[in-house]
Length: 273
Image (cartoon, rainbow, N blue to C red; front, side):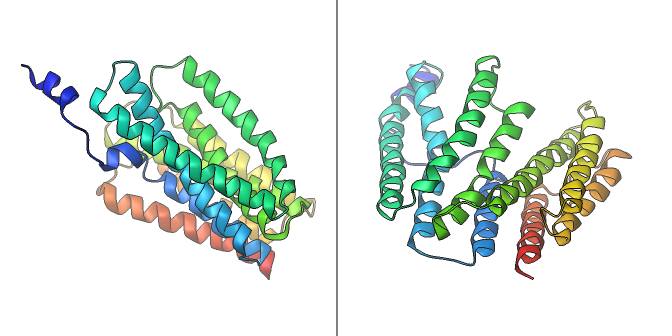
């Protein structure tokens, strides 16, 4: 009997590949917007906690769902299918319970989040159907903007009402996440010495700064919130000049988390001072 047959018939056990996403940096794209939204709302109550638990459960859903679908299609270990399905149902149940809890607490206003979420999900699905891989630039950009919805979710849950800052903070966090995608992909391409068009990195950062500055000029966001995007552009300019391979991938990952946290702290401080 071949090794591949043994792998598919061997009883499955819980391991990180069944539940943890492969894109480790995506944790900061989820948690930093949540922290910023909570800080800007100046409230940490039970509905906010439900958003955190439900958001984490929804975030973790994708990995067991992917494993389950691959097993069903014969592209993965069939022995993983039952456990992946149980994880899928467990996490889905947590998301459902958190959603019901928010409704019980009268957070009906959070239904508005379904509009951007549905639009992003539709775009993600259309790209996924036309590609053979889940790691395309378009899908990562959509996912990064979607994870930033944790910011408005925390703010809506905190106070139970909508106001302009809710959606402006989402825009800032989505822009931060999206620019992070461009930067990380460029650095990874440099590390593996792959040909990569460097212009999107530069012009995406220029466009991001122009939009944020314009929003500040219009008086819609505080000026301090512009500062992180100035730093992002300077980093992009440094990166496009020549290949910048990553020396230590783990250290690079921690550095990116630190950059996300610092940027998020500046944006939160902009609304608090």
